[in-house]
Amino acid sequence: MADGNTPASSNGIARDQLRSIVERIERLEEEKAALANDIKEVYAEAKGNGFDTKTLRQVVRIRKQDKAERQEQEAILDLYLSALGMV
Image 1 (cartoon, one colour):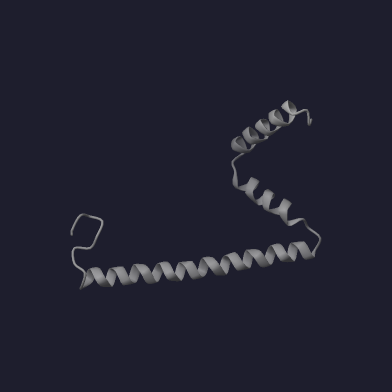
Image 2 (cartoon, rainbow, N blue to C red):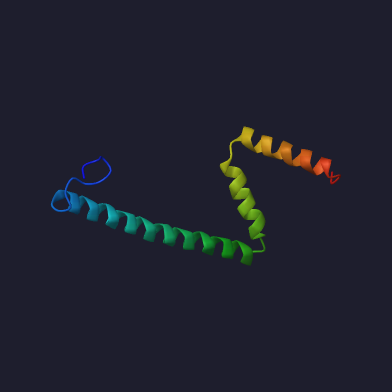
């Protein structure tokens, strides 16, 4: 089946390409797991130094946002809190 989504042949170069792709994905998954473990260790270190990890995660998430997106979310949060009489 040569439909653009599957190799034209199940042997030869297509098989080698498929194996290469799968092996690359596997290596990247291993690296991703190692990085996730490294991040976990940094949060554990931060906790050991007295930092609140829940708040740190929130800070990291906020820093990923651009300024306009962050301001919009803060405005919506303020609106909701105000509507609930919490401000």
